[in-house]
Picture 1 (cartoon, rainbow, N blue to C red):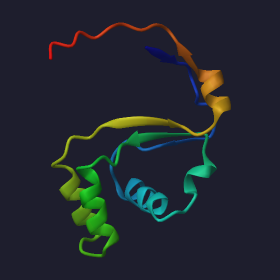
Picture 2 (tube, one colour):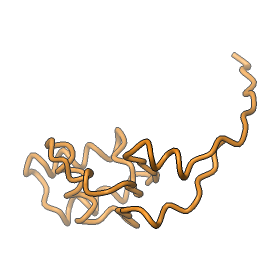
Picture 3 (cartoon, rainbow, N blue to C red):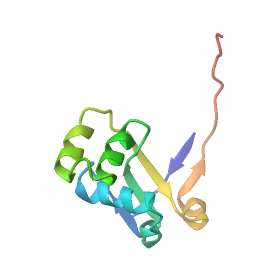
Length: 105
């Protein structure tokens, strides 16, 4: 288990929902643009295996922003915190312990 202390003093890009800003950020990253390099931490929705299907429809020009965002509402939204430098990890993340998981299989 890890504890994350306040990282708001760093350059943080926070997405509170899967909206046009989030969609275009994800597309830029998928297209090899280094837009994430402007930040130390990015917080927001994960473009997981299900959500990325919608993003790909947008990237291919099949759907517009409005349709893509509307379609994403049908998938479970999961948040992530992406720490983009070792310094941020060293200064804000601390290990608190671990526990075993029983495997019945």
